[in-house]
Length: 153
Image (cartoon, rainbow, N blue to C red):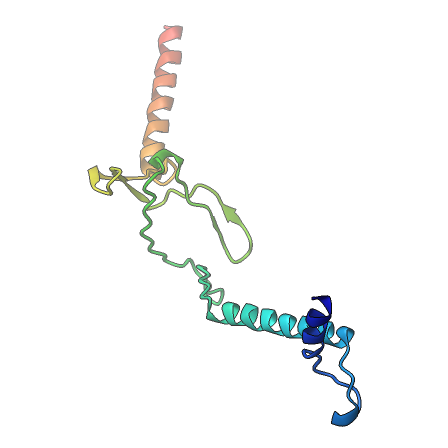
């Protein structure tokens, strides 16, 4: 049985030696031929699968040729994340990072099914309303002066 298998294995030798009349097919040549064919088929199907596979890379980049601030409108839904956890971090062209940006950010709560709950809430940046802050500081100064004046009399 072993002789029949070896003789069939010798027929796979793709590199026989000498002319057709004097060719000697060897087991070593057959093994090299089979290994080479298997390697070529494996590489072919590997490259074919890479060629046919579609890869999508989501990337958002900013045009660095603009000098001023760039207006960016985004509409992103995070169905399984609370609004309080979501923040926006940006970086300008000089590399300066702006963490937890809240200027003109609107958040809308959703149900698990994606239906809106309540009204859209605008993120409020306390430093953006300078007139309100200055009026509060003036009120505090007036209160402090009144308290000091009342204590002397």
